Image 1 (spheres, rainbow, N blue to C red):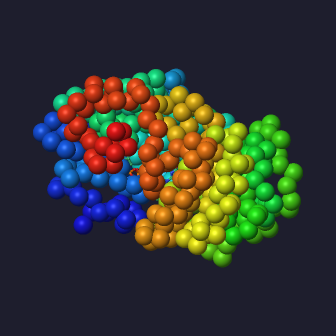
Image 2: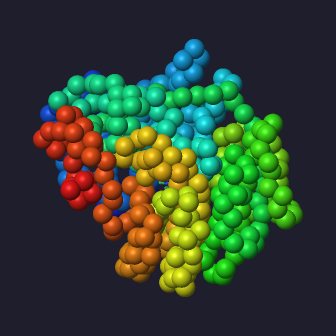
Length: 394
Ligand SMILES: Cc1cc2nc3c(=O)[nH]c(=O)nc-3n(C[C@H](O)[C@H](O)[C@H](O)COP(=O)(O)OP(=O)(O)OC[C@H]3O[C@@H](n4cnc5c(N)ncnc54)[C@H](O)[C@@H]3O)c2cc1C
């Protein structure tokens, strides 16, 4: 049985394919009536599901080709950040940012606008210079970042390669602070990447993870004493799965994710939701969630609050909006969790929340008007559609 990483989605695919060449991908797409790609399967929503053919690109040659003049790297779509990052670093390069764990595939993370944190960091898809996409007829097209197709929900075709911006490698040092009395947006501005964690059990935030770029001219947060021992975001959990802390400088890719590549933060025993609100209204949104915190806490493992820069990617939750994202790692009990997700959506409604495409939500998301035109162009017969997209894009 084919499932996503968390096991809450059992894929309905009639056949699973693992082509080993781009030509095989093209032939498969051309003859298939319904087809979806799956990356590393880390989405909690039904976004990658299909009743037709499900295709993994893990068997394609693991292309990672640096163009140091253009400052880009072209990677095969199934490559994971945890494979790409050490390769780039060993050649003296870096990506601008990473998500909380390195196991995600580049194409899957791009399709859903996966993000890390940082006031000035766009989501990971903002690093995409172009995508090589196999569209419904089996043709390959290259679409650049201005096309509206980068955050594509898997709805426009099967990406076979992604070209990403790179920059010179850099070092990060990470410290964890505890018991922040209230949501203070200035702290997000104090370092390259900042994440706050709370279990919504009281007024204060449990932890603040501050990732400073070594040598950057940022105004470091003059907070309380940092934690003197490594921490896990969930109190009481062993910190050996987490990336090094205590201010010890290290390569960007060993500090920007919270979790080490060789560890999985949990065995998929969770569900996740996330909602993006305008940064200007984040404190009010925080207070709105705080108003139902007992309901939230009852089904929660941990909540994370991050900032993401505005972007121009049509289907990005941060499209033209400086954002704060409220993330929730729930217990794995959909019947108990879904009513709380709905209650959250109601509380956040005044702030026009946008859901994370890869996580659990019930609301109707905003859709850029141009996206329907792209679907019409690249998938007129709905080969890459599924019920999730039918509902989201209707
Ligand atoms: C433990 C955990 C931690 C996470 N941390 C973060 C985080 O820090 N930040 C964040 O924003 N999100 C986070 N997520 C969510 C995750 O990043 C997204 O769900 C992301 O899409 C997962 O990538 P994937 O490779 O698993 O994609 P999948 O879940 O496999 O697929 C997602 C979408 O991408 C499409 N897709 C995949 N490959 C291709 C391709 N080659 N061509 C076309 N479409 C394709 C699929 O069809 C589907 O629509 C986390 C999830 C988990 C389980």
